[in-house]
Image 1 (cartoon, rainbow, N blue to C red):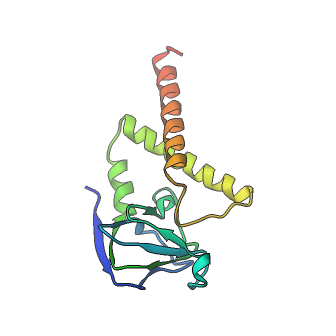
Image 2: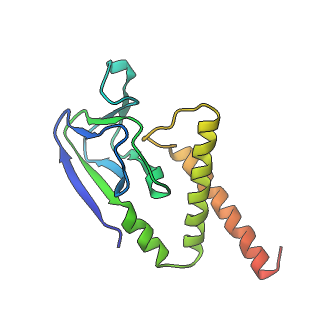
Image 3: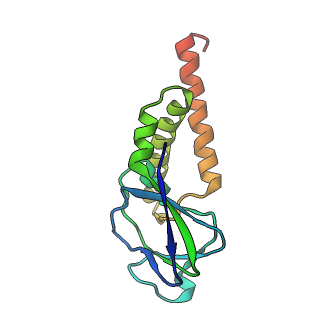
Length: 158
């Protein structure tokens, strides 16, 4: 199984700072009642420069698919619990299984890295906060389409 760790943070605790490697604890979300604040710098600045992150928001999703270094600073705005998923374990578990889900996850990895590269090419901001559910749903749908095309080719019906 994929392991995770729950960590409690008091108000104004630093969860991570810019450029820290995020290889082992690569995806996290706040649970219960709590808020985090993210800033695209190495220290917290004016309140207006900070992005408030509500409960349930996933952080550092790209670290599941590639080596990830934090692009800003994440601080607890209230006391909260953060769950960190061990991405190495996630990759290990995925590699032990085969089937359609694994094929989709492989495609999703490729598409998510390609999307991040496109954002960078277009001068967009790369963020620890991630793409959001709309983009992830689009990438998931495209991954399924690629899988379906491959199945048709394999089965000779396309």
